Length: 343
Image 1 (cartoon, rainbow, N blue to C red):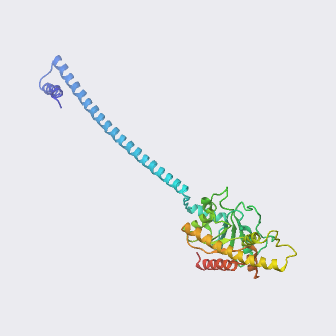
Image 2: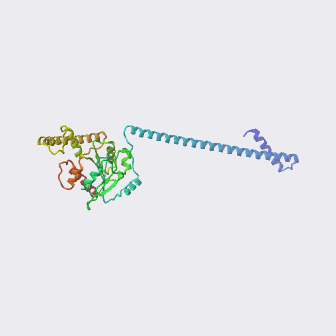
Image 3: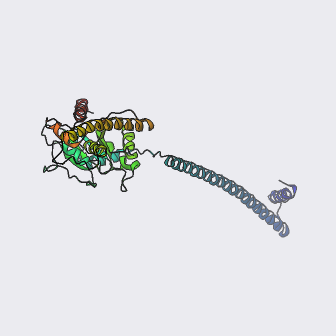
């Protein structure tokens, strides 16, 4: 504290001490009062100075907190922007983001599809027009005219997931006809989660003339959910083979013509056998290449048609049959193992 401040304080203290022993006159009394007032003002000034210092420290602390908050917010924003750009880069490369359902999502979809732990739930999926409804009718032993059959058509006939229990009383399989993937309504990379396919025990992916990104996206998701069995099925094989045969036969050929001679009939049979083999080989190689390109596990592709499946289910022989018996046996074995494991 400076001498200029100390001097009046010491003077005031001296005056007060002196007045205790000697009576003060009017002038002396005024001086003592002024000294006390000066001391009071000095104490207030010191208190104000302390308050000012405290306020400055508080303001400095608040400023540091604000700067730290702004730094954290900027860091969070930068990280979010980097994540957004990373997702966009994946999209441009054709890699779709993975979505993981919550426990609430799983419970909601199980309730919606009436999931029962006592049964095996099989979803039949694929692009629009792949023949899902016809396939479900055939594996259940039903023709399209049966009252319990799923509606079929050239265009997509399923707008919502439809549940079809097996007509056999002792069966514990429930089939689901799922709307076509890769359509304008459901994009391929959101299809699996949006349709709740993660709650199914088994998914059968029907493919057509080409293996689509939507087909591969479903298979990729099935690998991620390791408890889901997946089968690849090339449907409508009879139609495609017939188209290939007609392209190879002489111009004007009519396989429904009533007056087919022996030579034409022999040529037709030979062409059908050749095109059938070509179709099988090309289909298997096509699927193999797509799976390998996408780093997916190798899988057998079952080449089938609805008429041959229906025949096998009813213990009949069909000239159209290729992999129908193998498919039914393998799916049946999967169902049996799943029921035995109590998964």
